[in-house]
Length: 56
Image: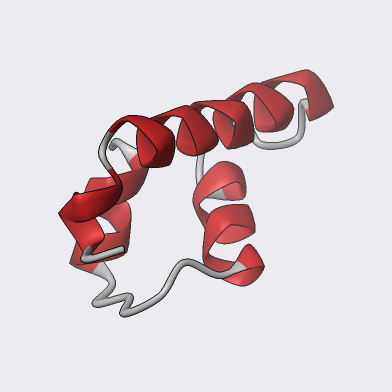
């Protein structure tokens, strides 16, 4: 699930470190540090490309 969709599904009003880390680790591959890092980078890119989706 894309990060923005995850935030909306969890009714996040603001982006927090906690929700980003929860999203990055909420996957069967979450024990892999490289995978988590890539997911967090992906979340950052999604937010940069569409900041208005969450009213930012």
